[in-house]
Amino acid sequence: MNNEKGIIWRSLKAAFPYTVPILAGFLFLGATYGIYMNVSGFGFLYPMIMSMTVFAGSAEFVAVSLLLSAFDPIQAFLMILMINARHLFYGISLLEKYSGTGWKKFYLIFGMCDESFLINCSVNIPEDADKGWFMFFVTLLNQSYWVLGATLGGIFGQFINFNTEGLDFVMTAMFVVIFLEQWLKEKNHTSSLIGIGMSVVCLLIFGPDKFMIPAMLCVTGMLTLVRKPLEKGGAVT
Image (tube, rainbow, N blue to C red; front, side):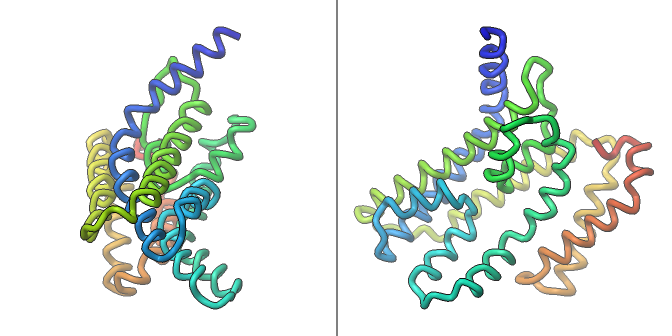
């Protein structure tokens, strides 16, 4: 029993440092979301409960307008599906990672976000930590930061009056840093170059508003085709 508690504690300590950059970003963005809900006429309980039960950043912002518009469940379903369709590809790539995690797998699926996906896919988990608990705490900590930010924004939003434009760039900068860290770890940059190349091509063809899903389809297809050569070369882990 004590040994199990020790493993859980070591996994938490190992996971926390990787989530510190997300802490900074999620507090800002979560607070922005809470303030947005507040100025739209919703009390702090709305952003708090939404961030606990939905936990899908962009979709939560869109949900504000859906809550204020006429009831149309089909439109809401399709809109949210399109916004978060990238998670379908995340889930496919995490099938092997999430295997053998027991009951924690259900929360890992529910709580998966872009930031947790990046950490759980790119980090080499310490040997003294448990894989399942490490990924669980990464996911739990990241959601906790978002819930905290959204709740604080909802509570104090009515007392704050400042321009929040540009705060979302915090997360963009964080993604760039994580990508560069992963790039430095790679011995073979083929998979990263495929991702960049396919994204640029789809951006030029489909435009900035519609390129995400085609890009992910192209990247998934290309990586599937070259998976075996990449595995032999050590580019896929």
